[in-house]
Image 1 (cartoon, rainbow, N blue to C red):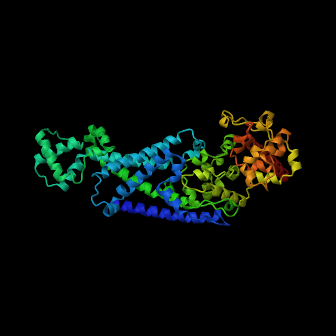
Image 2 (cartoon, helix red, strand yellow):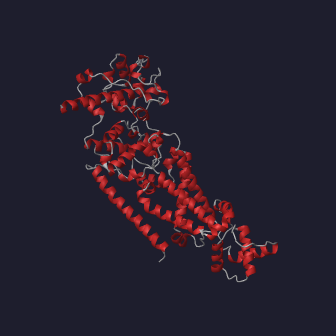
Image 3 (cartoon, helix red, strand yellow):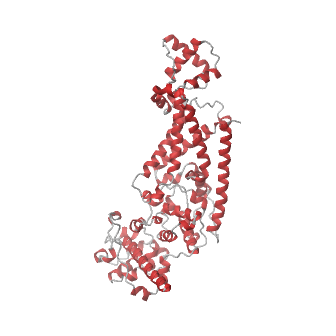
Length: 543
């Protein structure tokens, strides 16, 4: 058994053990997260097939990104199945497989090019000014895996290019696959391969039409059955021509062997790291896609559960944060756990080391969620994010974390009324307001005095429609409270805390009043006041 075989078997065993360890961890963590595990989600086979094979959810989210990701996935799978595992797959599907024979030579180069384009597009996107990049630690997620894949593909192209110009490899093939013993015939074949296969030979070869013709016949007899012309190597061929002038040094130092071990070593590293890296989402996305999304009834406390496997399906693409209804909250409060893709990372951290997580920050970020389902609807991995946030809320309550809305409901009105309301939000220094929204709206009468109490905002409000019996005041009534200079009462209303920030009221207001922005501002101001009252109670208890 060769060194190559031993290292390959060792890497495979390591990957299998890693998968087993991850499975055990998932089971244990799911039990610890969901001690009162309720109804789990059933499976959606159609979604499993369509999203696993064709990534339909990513297609709906973004056509260009789908194309890039689909090409990357197809290219990577081709390289893995046909090229990397050819010893297993070739006898089953490709009787005439040779890595230097077309179409395999062309497809290998094309697949590698697809993967490189996909990885470079990932790096470019992470450098853009997008919401996903607002929080540094989340921005760095996946970079190591992408860089390793780029190094793997790049070393593969360099390996093929150095093999193309390698005289030692040419001589090895001649000795093994031909019976040429005439020096003139060998020289003619060398001449032909120098001109048509870009092999670098140390000796000077005199060219003539007769010698080239004899070399062509010898090539047809001994070489063409397993060596197509390298023009089809759309990436490696130009690289070989570029390094041709250094071919003497490359051949003398057998640089092709160096690149072989680099390329092979990177393959083993990626294989071993698969269960513990960001690439593990390739295996987890089918599980997340197959889980049927919970409906409104199943989102009640005790029914929604946190699935560790579905968390691992997150690719940190940031689509969820791009459509998040409460992104203005993040711009004002700068709590990264308001952004869905960042909150997922915090939930993972809670699983691994709860003490290392700012649990109050996570609770505040999760409380900002308005359950609008936009993140769930757009998630390319098919993760039921709505169910995740509901389960997280239940888990945080079990760990003694209560939301500001619940605490405000426990504060007597007379105590709330005596406490001066926190001032309006002033924004972040040096940062322009989100989409031109001004701050301190609730403190400026011109922001809401135009309300004519037409009730259009109330009529289009989904919260009023769904929760009419339990709701206290409606959007137009809150605007009226502000006109009566009762901001302190408005901040404690149920409507302020159940608003979905769907912007239906604001978009339909005939007076163009920023109703949603005012409600959002009231929520933040009320939360600060609730924190102040609670901290005073804690100080009094300590004294």
